[in-house]
Length: 79
Image (tube, rainbow, N blue to C red; front, side):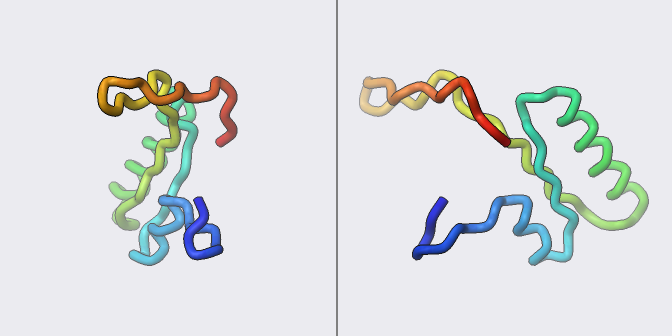
């Protein structure tokens, strides 16, 4: 998204501000999500610190606003 004319950081990028590891994964891919979660868990259990895990997905049914559904998400997405 754009904020004040600049690209704002991705959520997982913000982990660095807290001296944390950040991982971004396609949340619609169960295998990729499992692997990323395992990596995060192993990292934390090893004593290396916390991990911010961002699982990116999209809404398939849209929002409801005042009884009117808002447009549905597009089927093709890139992560």
